[in-house]
Image 1 (spheres, one colour):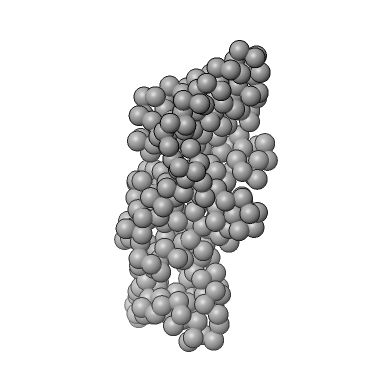
Image 2 (cartoon, one colour):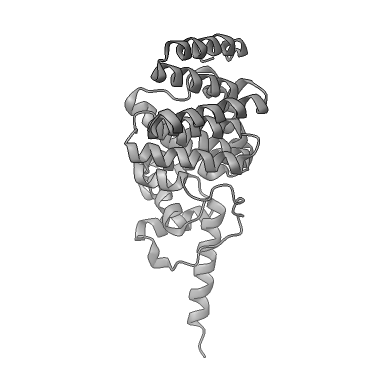
Length: 281
């Protein structure tokens, strides 16, 4: 499964499950069941994946605890990948349990990873990039590479391709970096939000006043509106490009917007309101 994405892995996993059933070894049986369900979610037809995941959930609810249930829900989310809204809801249930258990080492991040795949599948490129950025940051800090093993790597690459089809390189890089610098609480809040309701359009303009941004952020927003790249902004303001990226991430968060076009629209709106206010009456 992990090395070669080979569907033939399901046969020995099935035999392992049956052997542990015969031994009445419940913990080992569940692990065999869950790996079989995960393998089916990646490699088998949907109906087989759904059956394996459903069986693992029934077993977890009968014999296991919340950790077992969270992994069974994860496998159900994977089995439902053809229906992103359903899949995301199941993965979010799994994530909530992982958060409650404090399973930051693997569980929380593997849920966030899979939610990112579903976001990318429905065109929610900006949050998908942020979620993948958060997981990438975790991987670098912990050494636990979620997107490394075969099918996980394949799905991540597929998600990245979908994201890049919807975002230009600079916007993708900004969103990815923004996810990397978000706190765990913030990234979990993003992953648990309504991500499959339909992508926000670039015409959306924030109603927040200019005071919502710091003076430096207002300067950067003005330069974005003029069409300058991050590197050009950094040179003009005599700051590092990384600092520019950090400020842009904060601008996106404070204004609740997702790309440079929306920044430009917000600046234009603020300028128009200021000019109108200056007209004598």
